[in-house]
Amino acid sequence: MFPLTVAGATSRRAGHQLVGPVDLTLGGEGVTVVIGPNGSGKTTLLRLLHGAARLSSGRLDWACSTEEARRRQAFVFQQPVMMRRSVLDNIAYPLTVRGTKRAAARAQARVWGERVGLGEMLDRAAPVLSGGERQKLAIARALIAEPELVFLDEPCAALDGRAMREIEEILGAARANGTRLILSTHDMGQARRLADEVVFLLKGRVHERAPADKFFNQPETPQARAFLRGDIVE
Image (tube, rainbow, N blue to C red; front, side):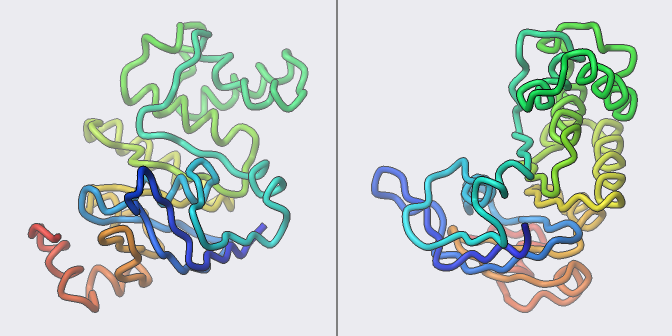
């Protein structure tokens, strides 16, 4: 599946260029954290890489067919959609659409529900869950099919510290099991805790990219230094 090579990729909407041109090569290990000011294109970039946003120009080349790559990845949205089903059936859904028998899918979903701390809520209707519980469900639903790659768009936005810590622990376990993670966040503490490498976006383009330690300790550009200080960067 990897590497993913991105060459001159752009995304436009209504004549406005949201992202690009972007040139990146992404390998198959670790956690890439995408950061940048509001409006810099973080969500659009993740959606573009995943295939959920239209590629207006340029190329995205996987080391396998695009169809195969998409079968082997998942996406967790900032506000995940909860189907009008139980928590258990929401988690099981990716397996059932792949043809797994319902009983087997539900058995695996029960394991994942316990793993992410939703074991006592599996029979509840998913739409009544709290924000943190919904994110746990969405992550379990993304991971149950054992994807090689998971995109996460601001997975802890508006969550309290406890919920954030629990979700970071889930993501850390996924990384340890070999799942490639590419996520956006506005929280620099979270970025420091999770990132193996950082992609800093500015005005829809990759302004700086570096291993996490280097980026946070010795950013190369004045814009990155200003952003890390908490200054307004335009």
